[in-house]
Length: 107
Image 1 (spheres, rainbow, N blue to C red):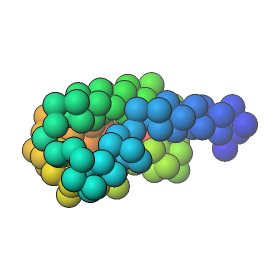
Image 2 (tube, rainbow, N blue to C red):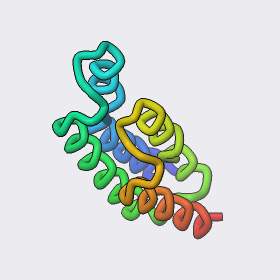
Image 3 (cartoon, rainbow, N blue to C red):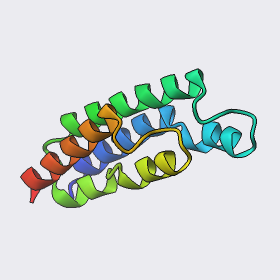
């Protein structure tokens, strides 16, 4: 991977980390201070899903190894398990499809 590619991946990860609901908001759910269905949590999560979708779409030039570093599946699984998202949520399905298509195109 070239230095430019590595920099692009780091920028993508930084962008995703900024709005990631898992580190802070999911902790509030686990502590009982926030419900998984809280409107604010839902709003932050849906905005983050949109950002994730954009990052994957913009990173279509990434190779398969790079894309695997951006795989949304583990983070989606955590949010689904916590009850924040449903497995059949439209944005979840769209993000999964976009990622799978990008990965298939990179391999």
